[in-house]
Image 1: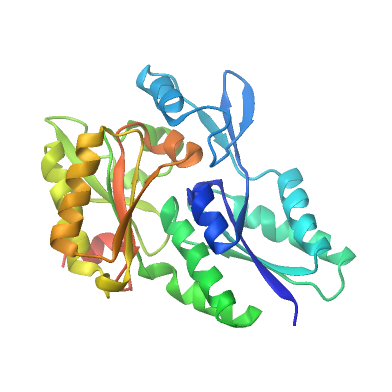
Image 2: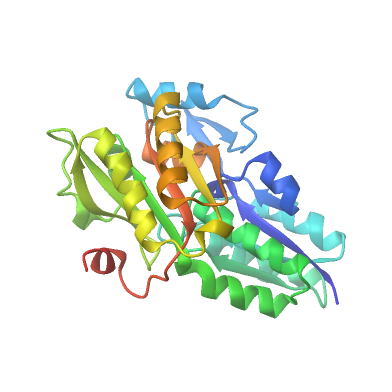
Length: 301
């Protein structure tokens, strides 16, 4: 049986530490600023989180690309040459076309590698929600699951990812097309803060609005507490777009006192997702009760 390599992309927001721990690699997308394309590195070697988010605070927009064909060729070929089969878990197709590009290219490159396999999976998630599925897949591989079993279990696990996030403004999400157009009624007025989730179809969907930033942070914890499962065995991921340390500490303390997970891991929202959601975005992710329908419908029950 051939070895299996788990790949994600720049939308996964996995840190170097997590990728090293779980033996995961990723395919880089690009950011575009002032007509210059820069690889969207999760190591932040091209610019710091503060530099990226300060550009946006100044009112300028940073554009993004999907994974280029050349990048798929570089990464896929690297692991195929080493004798691996590949499972690529990509950003939700509702937010990026990278998974479809990977599928098309994989058919071409496999012609040169008889017997090798590549599976490109739509994670139905973004940010660390995608990364969590990569970690889950890596754990399955380490436990001895074969290729088909890993693919099947990851596909079945996608709607167990629970995301609860709040943004400073919906402007960036509207501009990037990453939020449903039908959700435009969540206006950025009167200090109203929208609560967003990744719904069952892979959209970013505002499900409710809360007045005030502190109340929105409390609501993230309350929603997660209602839907998380086996929290004492889980790491809750707290991802943020250059948020003030006091808010991170407050949210982390609330998670530990109310949800009581095994651990809380704090990470930056990476360049691709960050360019779409904007500075001061913050959210929490964990595995929980499965979404069986549109997220907005379930959360309104």
